[in-house]
Amino acid sequence: VGHRGVQGGARFGQSVLLDAAAVAVIEGLSDLAPLHNPANVAGIRVAMERFPELPHVAVFDTAFHLGMPEVAHTYAIDREVAREHRIRRYGFHGTSHSYVSREAARLLGRELSETNVIVLHLGNGASACAVRGGASVDTSMGLTPLEGLVMGTRSGDLDPAVVLHLARTAGMDVQEIDDLLNKRSGVLGLSGRQDMRDLVTAAASGDAPAQLALDVYCYRLRKYIGAYTAVLERVDAVVFTAGVGENSAPVREL
Image (cartoon, rainbow, N blue to C red; front, side, top):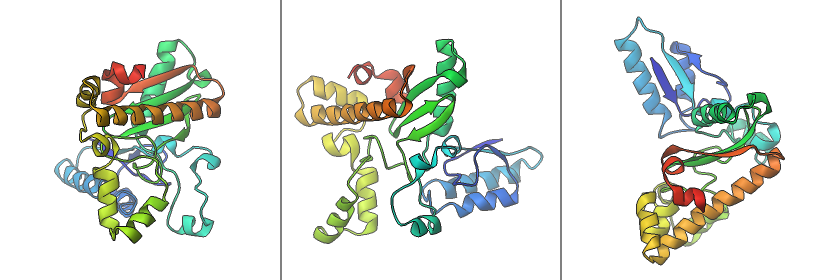
């Protein structure tokens, strides 16, 4: 039985055969992924109870990125605070970035070890990844899946002082700000539309907020492609995957 685990922290750099101790570690990482890890653990425990004769394996979204260079995963905050609270760039969508970068090398007819690609995983959640020789060297999502690209409902990159400003001037508490940035931002917050198909159609019909949302979405993508080109120095392909990446020709063109 295979279990997708969103957050493996700094503990799991590869898939793991599950036992009670491993499940306890995954549960202990719940503060880093409160919406995902508790549900993952509940599913694992039920499955292990129902199918005790089968091996159970956890495959983590974060594992592919765990070997990123220290310079790429380190945030410039007090190092003791970061150490105590496990604050670093973890990255997500690792199973996708890992598989897609391998497939890209195969389609290009190149050895994986000699292939550099930028993978754009564009769905409702979205992330970019710079892959050098089959290894993740940088990725846009960070401590949580909120950082990086503009997404369906998530803001992506944001001046952290926006959070402080909203707390001070709007009186918003932590939960309200969390809800705003994760559920009421991104292209939904800019246009009132979450589905990229609806957004493209509305923009083509002259809807100004939809056009701005599409422009902001693609502008952020171009910035990350440029940044990761600088990181990799040589890029053999830009690879699109997930619902928007695979199916939206207008977004790829823009």
